[in-house]
Image (cartoon, rainbow, N blue to C red; front, side):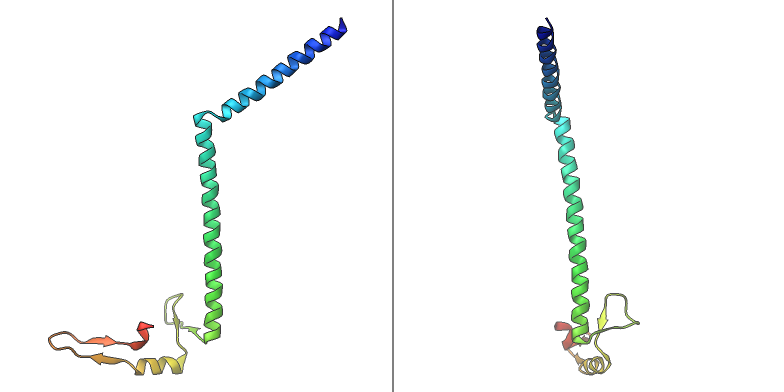
Length: 117
């Protein structure tokens, strides 16, 4: 008698457990649930992409500072941020090399060879 009651209870518990598992899986496969999962993955991918872009920007800034130090370029306080200027003597030589090209029937255009590079 106890043996039958035990197996009946065990079978009922297994049935409830299996039904619960199947219902959970079915709920995961509904269109709303799939859309929510896709949206979560898209947001996660967006955050990863943003973090990657910030890392790249930080690396670029660091490398630019290293190159500016190696080339002897300095920050000019008269210029806006992120604009570097040549050191004093080199800047004066560059400004001294400005030439003006005169074209007939046109306004004068200032040409700076250093702007091409």
